[in-house]
Length: 346
Image (cartoon, rainbow, N blue to C red; front, side, top):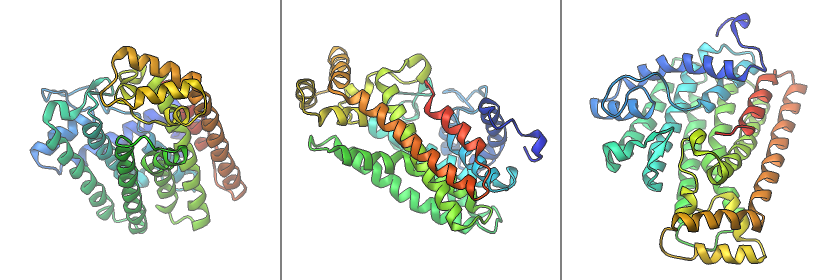
């Protein structure tokens, strides 16, 4: 992926993701190899390189969304794709740290069509593995030898604090019924959109792009991240679990306050009132009650609100790309990635 004639066409998103995964896997493997044997095994399982018995598998798990955006942003400002790999590795390490620890906190039992790491190795061990990946992310940046690695590390640290704050807000939502829609939007911005914005911004900073360009890339990533999270929330309620790799209605069963749910809970209609009654119960919802909750979310207007909000966030992301294009940034691949991510069904 170094020569222009070797890169996939800008509208070949599938080819781009395949190339990114091929480029990332050896670099990630080399980074994880630095960990001790216990953490290395858990993290290798998390990345999909081994199964629960330690046997090699077919390859890297996950979509590599954040590395794909970072490398596309690096390409957009005229940087070398291969030179940006350490930055992409750092972002992917931090992302998987959050996945490991979120699965523990949420007690999710499946991810990427497989048992979650904590169900196999233990909750404490999975949390420690997440800590290992966070530390490793900064070590990768520190040892990259790149001129702008310090700026990237500062941005990653700032984003880490925001991610933690977002997760703390999410946990707090489980203990109160007084969650406003503004609260939920802020939480999703911190917990999800921040890392996509960070990936895009670092892609520019890694090659010394000016602050105006880096800020616009970050805003693009954040708006795309909001649209991406809204799409994820919609799939969590109405998606096909065979394609998403997650149990449908699981979040509703635990009375999680995702964006469509909060939009429905805060509406003023009979379906919203019925949904609030379900969510005010102390115990986990039964499968039948979760299915009822999904219907109430839709009828109360939560689904329509989320779909509209996703469209608005995507329009804002595209506006940032239009501005970047006027400054001479090559935005075509970022635009194609954005359309693909928001239109996904998994």
